[in-house]
Amino acid sequence: MVSSKSKAAIEFLHFLADISDPNTGDISALKLAAWLGMTEEALLKRWMQRGPHSGWRSFADEVIGVLDAAQSQGASLDCAIDWYRNTPIAQCGLRTPDQIVVAGEAPWLVRQLDVWNVWVRPGATPRLHDRR
Image 1 (cartoon, rainbow, N blue to C red):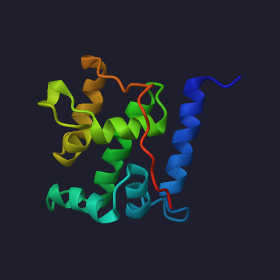
Image 2 (image 1 turned 90 degrees about the horizontal axis):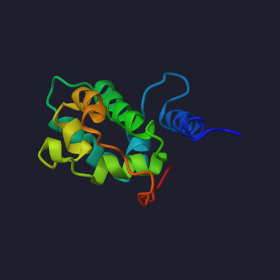
Image 3 (image 1 turned 60 degrees about the horizontal axis):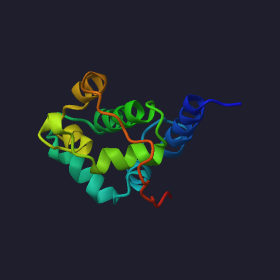
Image 4 (image 1 turned 90 degrees about the vertical axis):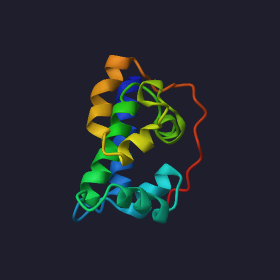
């Protein structure tokens, strides 16, 4: 029998394969945006809010890193995405993880999740995503 952690890891690998170019490994803004339930334009706007010092790859890696940390808590990927987009975190001035990533604080957020005991709710209602 496969454990829930193993299922989550497999699900995350499928997600990474779906959003990555098989030849270059580059992350597709269009595919990542679809998984996040937003338009490519909205995702790229978030990236541009970071300023000229932030490359696309760095931004995408931070989004993926936060989703990985959230999903590794045993939640489904859909629940992790819902948490990322919609859950305000009290310890961060009620900003959502999405807002924290846009502010350039993703590495700090990933480190703090265990400290704060801020967990993704495995029973949360997942958002439906238009995956292309």
